Image 1 (cartoon, rainbow, N blue to C red):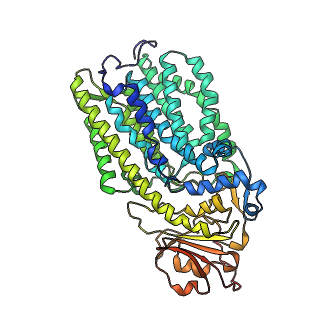
Image 2: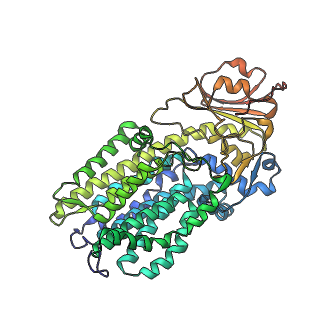
Image 3: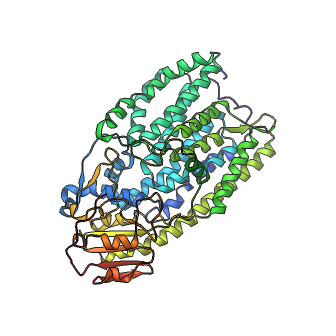
Amino acid sequence: MTDTHSPPPGHANQPIGFWQNRWLLAALILTSALPVLIADIAPLTDLPGHMGRYRVQLDLAESAALQRYFRFEWALIGNLGVDLLVIPLAKLFGLELAVKLIVAAIPPLTVAGFLLVAREVHGRIPPTAFFALPFAYGYPFMFGFMNFALSMAFAFLAFGLWLHLARLDRLKLRAAVFVPLSGLVWITHAFGWGTLGVMAFSAELVRQIDKGRNFFGAGTRAALHSLAIAPPIILMLLWRSGAAGGQTTDWFNWTAKYYWIKWVLRDRWEWFDLGALVLIVLLLLRALWSPRIEFSRNLAASALFLTLVFLLLPRIIFGSAYADMRLVPYVFAVAVVAIRLRRRATLRFAGIVAGVALAFVIARTGGTLASFWLYDRSYDRALAALDHVPHGARLVSFVGRACPEPWATSRLEHLPAIAIVRREAFSNDQWSMAGAQLLDVDYPPGGRFVRDPSQIVTAAKCPREQWLTIGDALRRMPRGAFDYVWLIQPPSYDPALTTGWDEVWRDGGNVLYRIGDRPTPAPPEIR
């Protein structure tokens, strides 16, 4: 590297063009929130389920209805980001708007983090960095991993600060700042803290090598500097000891890892999403031998370290699924942000690259905007049923799911939780994982039909899944435990299974029944 007080390497080599205009950069950051802002509830698969938990945590103490069904106990865990932010914001804006504002802030924070890292590593933001921005809407975000996504946004912003303070040679200040900062990232979600640690170590390793140290010496010093990010290890050990440990399994599932890569930009249109991925892969391959673009060794090292972590991670960690999948968009983003222009690149070439990159960002943002609008319409149609659900009702819901699923998933699996949000009703879609969730379902009459994934039903039995068929669910549900049955885009079923029920509301396949007959059910099978 150059002198520690000089601009980052490559600064003098980067052409100055319209893509570095501050107003343009601000516009790219802010417009990344638009898809979330156009929807009443962002159509992210798990988000409605999280919103149900937020309602319980906010109102359980004063709500006799919620106390019939749920328990909630605060604890210090590495999965509290949105859960904590929603407390003050819900008092100001109400729960639904508060969640919308928080979720809408995550893509801009992520985009800002990508650009900050690019600025620190390259000196100026190269036009190629814009190709990384759509990964803020990667598949884990679409899945609704809100605390995780927020922690990753914080991790990239913190990584940019880590690089900045190293460039200024303010290492003591960096250590002092990152002890508490790493704790805040960990509390948001432990995965973001781990990713920050990997990126910080790899960047420091390259910095130490550039100072002339051999690999062993550089690694030792990088590890010592990274101790400033290590204190949350103590919190992690306390959190994941004993009953809260959960199962860690499904190592080296290469088939799943292939799909996580293929689905990294998965949203609604397969051709559109895979086409974008192909473009990114071609860009990365071209940077390996192009005379006009190259990889920064600093970020290339971070990308390689993160790739190794992805390959080594199991699919399930401490009982939480999709652990390895969550990292994939950020591996791609780091690799793309690592690309910069070589000295021989002309301003004209840089302008062409900037134009193509901006067109890519606009196309992806526009596609996501259209997709969210269409999902929002399906949410609105289904949620009209709640106008007919009384406050505190005992509601059991069954959401249809195909196996295998089409590219465009319905994202309806946890929509029943909005009944908790708007009606303080029971919903059978909440998660119950020791140590990972602070909410627990306490409604014994419902038997197995009280928690996720009892709300998911299929036309036929799906291999390797515990979901019931729609027929089995309607037959085995303890009718005496519930007042209403809400079917959301269910598979076809025998109408005889709803004999004696009153159809309260219907919109196409979505239907709400009030249970009219009350036979004494056989004790439900617990699995």
